[in-house]
Amino acid sequence: MKAAVVRAFGEPLVIEERPEPGPGQVRIRLEASGEGVTHMAVGQRVAVPWLGRVCGRCEHCPSGRETLCEQQINTGYGCDGGYAEKMPAWADFAQQVPGGVTPFDAAPLTYAGVTTYKALKVAGVTPAQVVAISGLGGLGDLAVQYAEIAGATVAAIDVTDDKLELAHELGADLVIGARKQDVGQELKKHGGAHAAIALAVNPAAFEAVGSGLRRGGKLVMVALPAHGTIQVPIYDTVLNGTSAIGSVVGTRQVLAEVFRLHAAGRTKVMYETRPLASVNESIDAVLRGEVKARIVFDLGVGG
Ligand SMILES: [Zn+2]
Image (cartoon, rainbow, N blue to C red):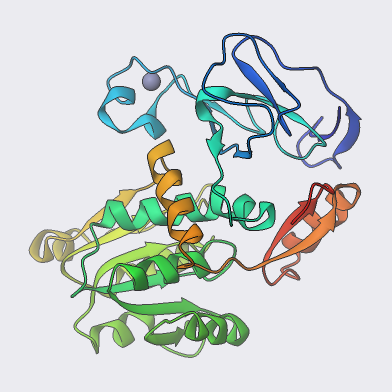
């Protein structure tokens, strides 16, 4: 099976042949089940998340926090991923995709959906709260929708007018242009945010939205700016009882809930499709900020 493979960081991906599945794995496009797999049938549609496999035995795994497992293997990082015509996956982590959810919707939901939905769970969002979504790139459009579904008053923050407009169309109650407005002050006009979800890959954006928390508010860190650090003001943090928490992807249960919401017609996924052969140009386009939505590689299996 052909796949786009990372041979060295910073180098273009190479299209090459990859091995067939081993015991306990399935070949996605489910043309065959691996040995020892009984809960899946050939032809069943599945999605494979970043969490490719966990140990199942550590203190985190059985307590609903499998995303923290230190033995986890990550799809496309610790094992082959989805930039391929076919791929192996551990059957227990391949999530059934409900009818009515297209492959092009399922792909972004399996990362952007699960990650943002989990971040809102970490924040403990409730209907009367103000929730700030900072960064409307590949994850923010879904975060806005989940915060709306949770019933919160949603403030969407970005530097791009197009993205703010989209957030408004997706239901954001207020939009804040981070280049022209003071994010903290704007949020404080609404009493401050109970939760701020930091999705922009820029440490300054973390600090900006964190400055708009109300007393007791939570800054949930999701984006990963390389070597990023933020200044946490000790005095304000102590007196205001604020907190900063990391949130990484989500469990299989979170993904199941994300699919259920989408199948019920409650979320909309933004994407554009490209062929897998364009993988290197596509990554460059993302890095240049030229891609409005997420890119989903069309492998010709339907939509
Ligand atoms: Zn574990």
